[in-house]
Length: 279
Image: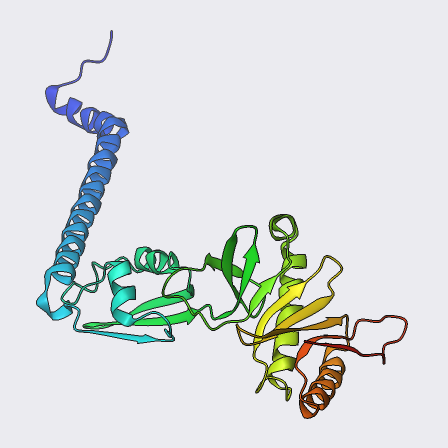
């Protein structure tokens, strides 16, 4: 005969079965995870709300309205012109100004080589400009361009650009397009000769007008006034020594009352030989 259990005797077994059943434990872990996730969502929501509120305050508060722009380094370009190009206006919120975008707009000006922008809270923008400085004009094909001392061609010559710069001729468009370093080296050589000429005794009476470079890199200078141009055929280096020789010849011809048409100092076989032609 099977043992019959009384209702009271069933209670320990039921409790044991409940303790052995894994479902309530899994349910507890699930609820705990759900509460934890809910907490994370709540914290994230609050953080986003705080961040949004803080940003809204920064970009709308009158405290951060632009009151001052400190700009350094500009020479040919004015502060107002550069700010207008960058679309920066006084009163703009300093946090709403796109500094990278403003920088790129400034760099679209050929004279601006580099630009650095920064905020100084609460109401100031700091701008540091490095400009390209034109050292000469160079004729390439039918166009005339401005070039820097390093030989960088950076814009076509236009009204308002410096007009009293030495003119470099003789360089081909093929050289400018296909051999940038060779082109820059030729420009640097021409400008080196121009500096030597400016330091010579010739410059006071015969201002430099043009520097011509032939395909072999030989140099010829056109000097004097528009009504009376003389030619100095220098050939290759040493240019400073040749300019000193030309100065002595020009002075001697002046003492004789003669006007210089050309002075030739390009003899490779006889470097000391100087030939002068008069008008």
